[in-house]
Image 1 (tube, helix red, strand yellow):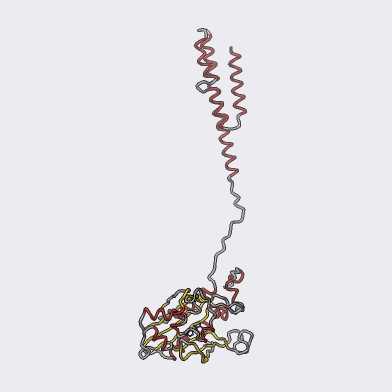
Image 2 (cartoon, protein in one colour):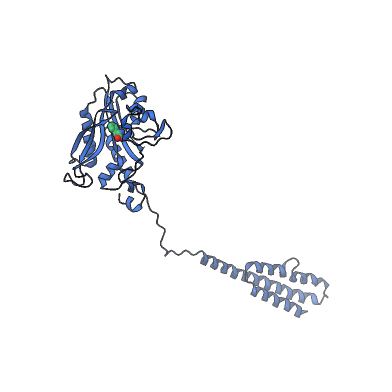
Length: 338
Ligand code: PHE
């Protein structure tokens, strides 16, 4: 009978020794010590033994039970510790690896020059207004004294959406929109995108303009000159020479184109200024009385000037960039230089 108990003990200890995970250790506990476990069954069997046998059998069996219990819990500690080690090893972080770098974006050169231009004019008391890029023929042409069949329409290759709706070819329609809803005195700039069916190294189908205008009872050509001179000197430096050339726009009369001394060759003559020593940067003039009539301003009372400039062109001249397409190709190597 003792031998039977001894075998039970050996078997249990062997099972415990061989258990490799907590789960199988739990099974062993159930198999030996559970309600129907091998040790438990033996304990129940005590009742069937003779009086003499009982104490000795019970003592040995209890010893075995205690031994199995303590062996299981010791093994449990060992397996838990091993589990923890394994987890620590698998979750280890190699802090010697280099980190991930995030690249930080930069202001696009066009946005940069746009905000510089805006800054100059707002410091002179101009407010900023916007208008729609999808515009009607009326605001883009008619109200600016460019009737249908007027040859000046050829100056701008227009993207038409329907007979009456188009992509604005310039920011001048904002003049009309603002004058329709506000009364003088007005001091406004209107920056924005414009569209022309044109594409080469100095033209893209979409580009940016800044329109500017001032309307009051006593605005003269000399005001236009003064404001533009101040602007040009703020943008290109106080040494920059300026030239007004007579020109034509249907919505201004008289009209002028404004040149600055070539910022690349300083007048000596180069490819960019086509050996003239001058660069055209602005169109301007006194607002045509016909335009005032369209917005029900009395031309006998009000006068005003307007001007428009291409932001890409100004940016190219300021930074010496010779291909306008670079602005829209999103080449990081180009954009990082500003
Ligand atoms: N709208 C003209 C253009 O796009 C520029 C301009 C604006 C000229 C205002 C005179 C007055 O060429």
